[in-house]
Length: 548
Image 1 (tube, rainbow, N blue to C red):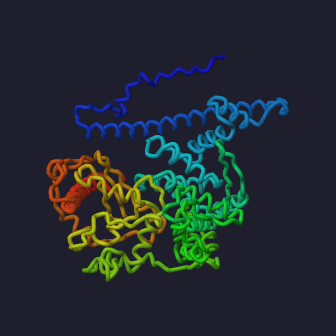
Image 2: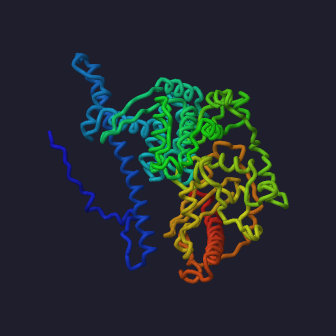
Image 3: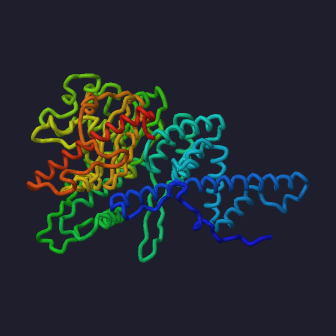
């Protein structure tokens, strides 16, 4: 017998041995900030390792506890005096961590997954390549698979895919897990969908402080269309409506549910310019579109390759065919093997002719826009889950309206979706001192994989591949003539690794007004991207392709 020891020796451990060194303020503000970011990243990897160690211990405990209780049953002990061995073990884990039953079951399930179901993926947790939330997410998305042979194949491919993906979010990892499961066990996807259908419901939940919620659970496509139509209705108020966007959506939903009129909340009806007539609302809702992307062969029933639903993620082939068969669905072909936007990538001497609109070199063709948004699926900044079709297409290297040949091209190698917030951050940070801004980059590697990166103000760089390119393997092997241009670019040679070269004028704001400052910022970013490409090429020759 012994009392549970709640003391902790962690505060006395020297963390410098695992790379967690407290930055020295004497090194300067930029270096100190970069040092603290590295410290936080090392702590994240440490948490991942400790979670793996926790799961290992839970797994060992459960194995021993279940075996011991099973031995008692087999020895003739009256089973009426015993609970199921697994149930007892889960209950004790709940007591150990003071968590409710469902949380204890989740921990034990994750422990079993780490030791038996997904050991290779758990190895990435042990190495700190993925975190606790990401591991739990992929465990949940693969728990429908029962066949041990298929599960081993899923584990191998899932670990490889997560390693290749770069710096991704938990949601993106879940999508990768869904894709791997769908490819190896389509029947499991069908079972999951059938099981999920039983969860459709309408519930009223109390949130306290005088608030409650009506939660409608429906098919993903119907829910997204309904939400978009609510936004279209709420958008009809005049600029003087004092409510937030969320408050307007709430009022619009209640009005629809109760059969009441949705009205503007401004205080001057005489000057109100709200457009809430049935005709105006119908005109806005007619523009509501939810995008789903898949192989044409999937729709034709030739295979069961999964697809992608904008704002939702990976969906199975059966569900795709159901959506395509709806009366309100329009199907348009986008050939993944040779779309007009990519013909420039096969060696054509005029690389951007098919990618941009003839009347406006800044605007991409509809084909290229659909391709870029399909390949990324969401905002290109790591961690942002804003759906791609709700983002703006950004020229990574800035487009030069006065001299298009001098700026970034309107091409797959230079276009990426960014949500309004991240687009504004990229555009306006460093407006006067370029070194204080973000530097993003985009390129197509030697294997035809589209990569994007962002370097934050303090010099930390994150790389991620276009997430859905792995989903649509027909888009692998892309080529772009602009990549050859990058090899001959010359920029500043100072700085190595993740460190950035100093901005123009040694950090001083350039003279000549806003236009000159913008031009100076763009020129510095272009040189910085060129320097990073040379560094990337050097690392690739030494270490192989990213992620490193």
